[in-house]
Image (cartoon, rainbow, N blue to C red; front, top):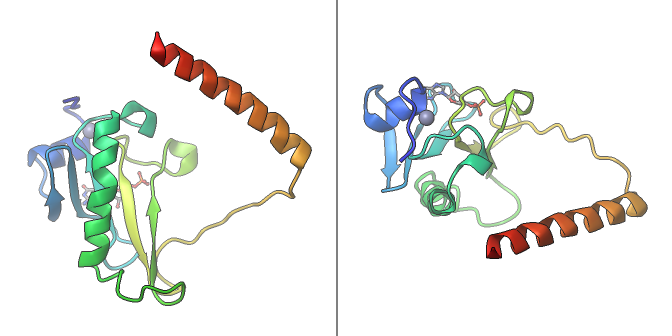
Length: 153
Ligand code: 5GP
Ligand code: ZN
């Protein structure tokens, strides 16, 4: 397992720094955020040191969403199973410009019960431009085809 001696979240996994632990599996670890933006703000981290999502092996990533699901139930966020009422956001920041502070991948589970607490989303949507989208679509499909070919080699 990749670990970094100076990383605060690696230290939490090893128990060198205390944490309010919730679920721990072979591949991931979850605990309460010490500066919550809403009550029940939880972090889920892979037991593998890597700064950004693409640095983390698939098996660790696959372990995380089922852990998240259990935590939503523990927080009773599943009880009002309608589009209205309380909700939650799953947030995972990569890089300073994207608001990442701790360089060990972490997924935030942030309850959204009202306008005052939790995540506020600013989303500067551009007008629909099908020509631009079409070009991007072609470019990305080529990238994905090349990646799939390379994986077969
Ligand atoms: P980021 O902005 O990198 O996505 O979020 C980092 C999160 O880690 C913040 O919400 C911050 O409160 C939390 N955090 C930073 N240091 C610690 C710590 O030592 N213990 C816990 N439990 N949370 C931490
Ligand atoms: Zn780490």
